[in-house]
Length: 251
Image (cartoon, rainbow, N blue to C red):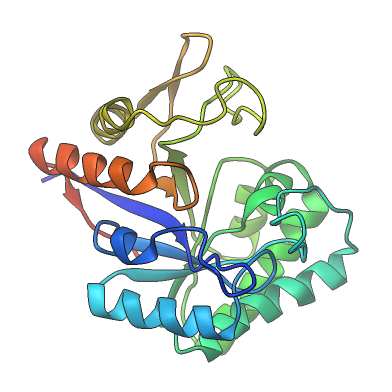
């Protein structure tokens, strides 16, 4: 049976208030990328997310970002590599300290995009992941989009898994449509579910100009803070089940 991971960015509390319906999302996804203090989240939300994941049988990943709570980690930053490495390592470590049986790391927001194009950022994040993997005594994969980070991870022996986005628009280049631009966010649950089945089965996704992109993804992502995320997640899970695609974590 074909299988695919379904992940969501969860535990993204801001000033103690959740930005998503975590309880509903944990019931549907197979992996949760948990905010660990850089853009959102705190010790209490991390502990809560770990407990929810354990109860639901969901794999936990760390979701570190540029230290930017005001901008929710979605503003590009210029951070010295040594400092970025320390910041990312501290965020991942905070989630481990909250009791997470950590399975993977997925950068968030602007950092996610930075490591695809900027070698210094990629090297810093990979080094932080390698630090934590060494402490854990086992491999710790990175999840993201193709870019310079793939080579940086390979050089450090860090497994790299590719993901595709279900609720974000794609440019013909394979990059995501920037937030705020037309087509950046998808909200139609039926269309998102159909995209999931096509990605899982054929590795194909349509760009905003109608062209077709090939994405051999190990994981499919839905953002917990996207409007209608729960309805989309439930539709995706039902469509994958109906198509005979097992939803399970690859970690």
